[in-house]
Length: 170
Image (cartoon, rainbow, N blue to C red; front, top):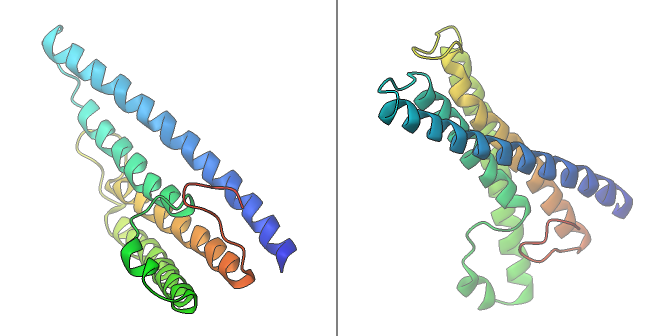
């Protein structure tokens, strides 16, 4: 079980770092496109019509996928007052239950995002040469990240191997 967890954690580390690089690139594009939009509006007096929707999609990717990465890195909101005031056995039970609920939430995000994207995929965006379904892709990817990262966390809890908050590597 430890060897499986080690291999899975390694793969999740690569996935997490890849998602961080992707989010960083999206954020850099947001800054560049925002600069271009401001330049077009105030200097050229002709703002690019496509920039705002492009920025919106990029922000959706950064914020949604960033939330998924935050799950693995243990940077999400935790109510430590409750956890610190109970016994070790109750603490373990609360952690397993909370992470199992997050796993279910991730699966629901995948299903809901996929369904929403499928319903509007045939409709083009008004300003960009993409489908309206593209706006739901970050939700699907985030659900996948949350699901995979929660499986890792639950495996760690099952074998008694825990990481500190903010420590992405097992």
